[in-house]
Length: 238
Image 1 (tube, rainbow, N blue to C red):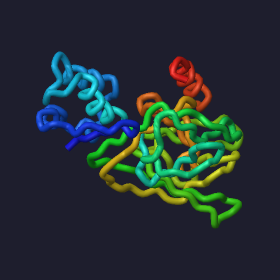
Image 2 (cartoon, rainbow, N blue to C red; image 1 turned 30 degrees about the vertical axis):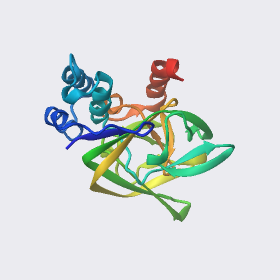
Image 3 (cartoon, rainbow, N blue to C red; image 1 turned 180 degrees about the vertical axis):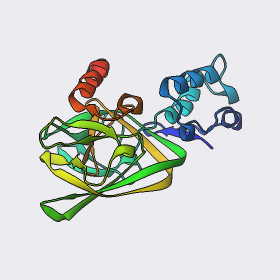
C-alpha cells in the first residue's frame, strides 16, 4: 500500500479507489518524469475517491522521488538562535538546516520534506575518522541517494549510495574526512524525501546531496557541475 504525507500539512488518508489506481510506484522506482506524468494522468480530469487534483497529486508524487533518508536520520536545525538536532520527521518546510559549503558550515532552507510509507530498500553506511577511530558515524539512505566523495588530489564527486565501497572517503562537517568501513542493507517501512535550497545537507553528520536520483545516476559526477546546475534550476525558489 502506498501512502504519502507532507510533513508540513496534516496529511490526507488515501481512499481505497486511489490505492487501487496507484500501484507501488515508490517500490518500482520508475523514472521520475514518467512517474510524475502518470500521477497527473491518474489525477486528471477528476481525481478518484472524491479528492481534489491537488490532494491527489500530493498523495501520488512522493513515490516518484527515490533519493531518500530513513527516519533515524538526524538534522541540525537552527531555531531561535540555537542549533538543535532533530529527527528528519520533525523537520518542516522553511526550516533552516545545517549544511557545508566546501568545508565551511552554513545554513540552507528546506524546500520539501515528504514522508512516504511502503517497503523500501536502504543502505546503511558506516564510516570512521581515520585519525580518531573511536569516532564512528552511520547513515541510512536509499541506494539511489547521492553522496559526496572526497579524493586526495582531485575535486569532490557525487555518486549514488549503491556505488559506495569500503575504503571510500565521505565528508562530514568542517572538512572532516570519513572512511567507509561497513555497508549493509535493510528494508524499512518509510522514507523521507528532503530537499534544500543548497541541494545539500548535513544528515547524521554526513555531507550529502538532496538532488533527484536521476541527476546523479550512471556513475560518479563532478560535485561542482552538478551543484551549479541545481542552484540555477532552483534560484527562483530560494
